[in-house]
Length: 86
Image: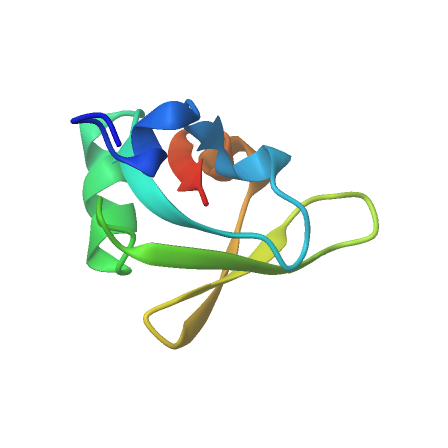
């Protein structure tokens, strides 16, 4: 195996592109500092596992599970959260 991990093999995807049931690890959050701080206070911290539970019929919002807590996120917020799948 090379020095890079399997996580490095696939580029991170935005959370809003994940399907229900998919799991991954948060790689980073790319939005305004105030929004980033709020999301991190909710437990969305880089290195944390995340799972998409379900989406609303029109795709917004989506329900995720982080550290045993279920959260609803707007699609615009989820688009700024980058997740490594694997």
